[in-house]
Image 1 (cartoon, rainbow, N blue to C red):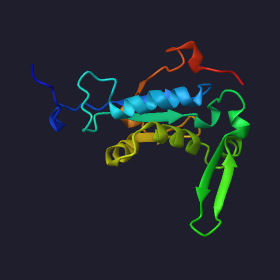
Image 2 (cartoon, rainbow, N blue to C red; image 1 turned 180 degrees about the vertical axis):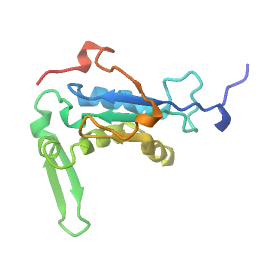
Image 3 (cartoon, rainbow, N blue to C red; image 1 turned 30 degrees about the vertical axis):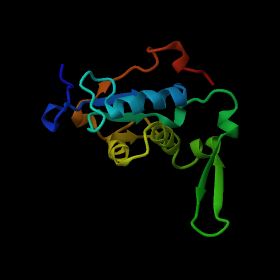
Length: 154
């Protein structure tokens, strides 16, 4: 028995559209990370970028369980001594770039290597309902209907 290894000619990339409104952040991130890596395909090869291109809309309407919205803290550093800054998830979601919460969650679900940084370029996250990728004819992935735990009302 031989082990199947995909070649660049075997890779078939699709465009997936996900509406994040009312979906729990961690569950959304794990589904998107799986799609970006290509683990949902039978021809998955760990060393190849086999994943689909994923478009996430309504990222500002994503939900969090428990008190995470008010208590989850995101840190960044300015590069200067004592320059650590922190913001809560609520401050980021209500700020100018709410899509950064979803992007960070997906990035942290991928392994930290060169390939995952390349796969992150296949992710597009938009705060509103509009996106400029209509020409790619993305197929809609209904994450809400996959599992009843995927959704949460505010």
